[in-house]
Length: 111
Image (cartoon, rainbow, N blue to C red):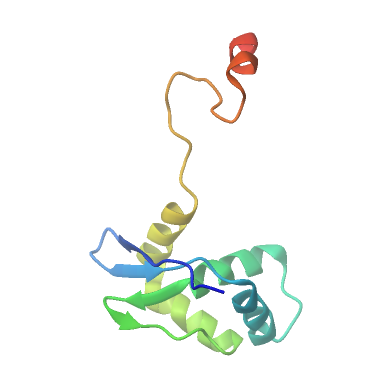
């Protein structure tokens, strides 16, 4: 299995964040690190934090417990978390108002 490619973003404060898509084994390790049955919201937040590979060129190891997940989140700060969220959840393009997920004939019929 190949490792997902790294992507790099820069936060508004200039922090360089390299991240990657979590693999299934990463997800299992994160669940184990949590040490409890996390809520879906907590798990989504933890998955985003644990996708970080490096901050300002310094490698970030995959957290091994809940405290390390929290520490990585604190290291990113609100600015880093916001940049990471925006990169992983882009807003749909504002364009002609047509839904790009619909086939052309459906999109035309809808208008």
